[in-house]
Length: 171
Image 1: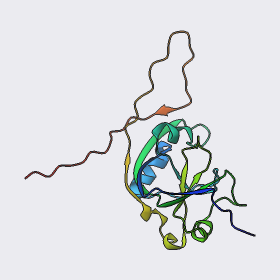
Image 2 (image 1 turned 120 degrees about the vertical axis):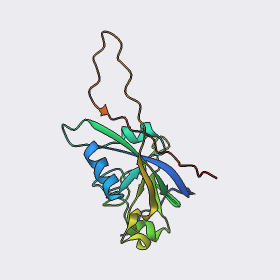
Image 3 (image 1 turned 90 degrees about the vertical axis):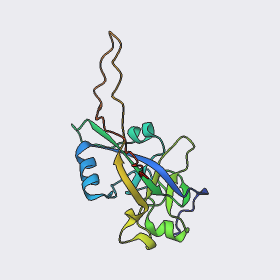
């Protein structure tokens, strides 16, 4: 069976990206300083990131009953990025498909989709997360109060975290 071919290829290099997850999963990612591939998704079971915070929050997947939302920020090496249609390949985009197309990452091809993914490739088979650095919690403002008469939105209880700060060297 032939590998899917990207509709377009862009050179993305290193990007500051965002990933929204539950509080418990965020704690695990920060403690281990690494992401783990998920299951499913538009391009298969991979690690997904967005360039915008609101897009990451929109794509968050969480277990039933867990309404927490923590946004993580990281420097992510997207490199040569292939733009694929949703559902490309029989099991999504795999490291083998990226390697066959000489790619480092994949993106959902639809113009309105801010969804990038990393998966294990031949060069990163043992540790695909070498392309993810400086993982930290991102400051997400609390939801604004609802207007009178409107029902409160309880779909997410966003945790507030401090953004990463850079230390300056004293001379």
